[in-house]
Length: 192
Image 1 (cartoon, rainbow, N blue to C red):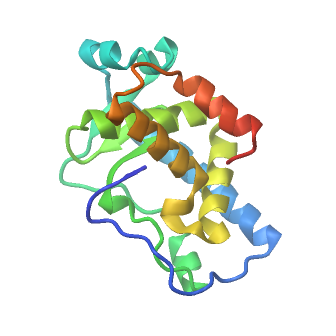
Image 2: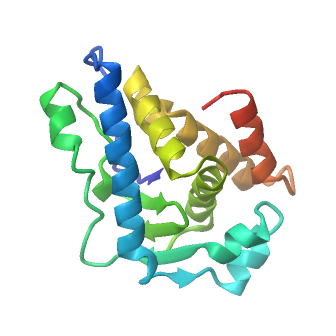
Image 3: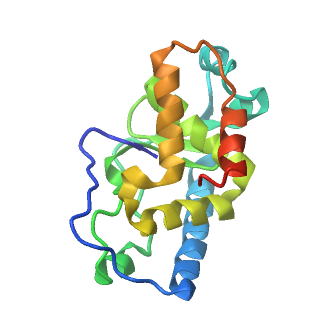
C-alpha cells in the first residue's frame, strides 16, 4: 500500500490493548478482506506492459511480473476493511485510509486511482513479492500485527521493507538487486 501525499499517520497516545483472540479475529478478517478485494478486481485489471516488465525485470522474478494485474479505479474508491469501525470503537485512530492511498495491492492485483508512477508500481510489486513468499494469510497477519504493535502505518515492517527497497530503486545507485532475495532475507531474520 503506497501512501499518497495527503495520507498521514501518527500516534499521540498509546494504543488500546487487544487480547490474542481479538488479534486473531482481526487478522482472519484481514485475510478475508484481501481475498474478496482481489476477486473483485482481478478480472478488471490489465497485465503490465512490455515496457514495465522490461524496466522491472532486473528486480523482480518474471513469473511475478507476468502474473500481476493492474487496475485503475476511476470514480470509486477501495473500501476500508469492514473491521475498521470495531477498531475505531476500541480507540484506534489513524487507521490507514484506503481512499487516500496511491495504490493498494491484493496479492497479485494492484489497484490505483491513477496511472502508477514507476516508484509507486515498484513499491506495490514489493508487496506482491511479499504476498508470494508469505501467502495471503501470513501477509495479512504481519501487516495487521505491525500496525497494532504501535508503529502506525509508517512502522509496519512490510511497509518499511517496501519503502526501503523503493528508495534503493529510485536512487539508482545500485543498478540491479533481487527483491525476492531481499524479502527472503527479511523473512529469515524475522524482520516482519
